[in-house]
Image (cartoon, rainbow, N blue to C red; front, side):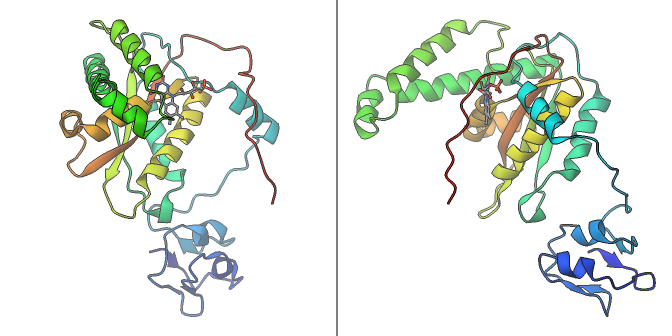
Length: 277
Ligand SMILES: Cc1cc2nc3c(=O)[nH]c(=O)nc-3n(C[C@H](O)[C@H](O)[C@H](O)COP(=O)(O)O)c2cc1C
């Protein structure tokens, strides 16, 4: 629970007004247990008299990132599927994780844990096992018996395309190939305990998105990896092989490495449709 130092508090009431759960009694200097640990009271106090659950009060530094900078950065960040044969050093990987303390989490639950796969052998294993899982899964729904039934039940599912994709995927599989991990030197796996009402899935994708942006500012490339998430979700054995704790589920995965390619042009995409109501 945050702690208020009443001796120094000037009763400006900023923390009281900003608290999303009306948890602060500033006369008594107490915070009740409806507190959702968002830390807004710590962040807003001009006198630094509200202390966080953990760590010290750290003054925010002004940032010089303009909206134009952000727009340019967004346009320049692309999925990287071609990496240099060079490790991402441990300090950099840990700094990616360290910065996650700033990223939002539903109800401030912060259930996510990160596993980083970073030896060549392990990344290759992750690649191969994911590929096997995918081939098995697509193989089932595109099998001669299941495919016609599924096609009737779900005509919108483009099974012939999926089947062609499976064939291409299998054709490209060979020892040492890296269709899933693209020879990335490190793979971040975001996982959390399975709960009925939690939103770890959303948290994981938000944290992976922020991480991808941060990695790019460090000159690294990244690639969200839905293949790994799908395979790991399906296979308890795979989760166990990659030391994902029992009762945890995998919610996001990000390849990280030094990019081999550099893009010079924007993608040229339509903006999403919008309705102002
Ligand atoms: C949730 C998610 C999962 C993705 N999974 C994969 C994947 O498994 N393999 C892959 O090569 N790319 C994957 N991508 C990358 C997208 O295919 C990519 O964003 C798309 O090709 C657009 O390219 P861009 O990111 O360079 O703009 C994924 C992207 C997202 C957002």
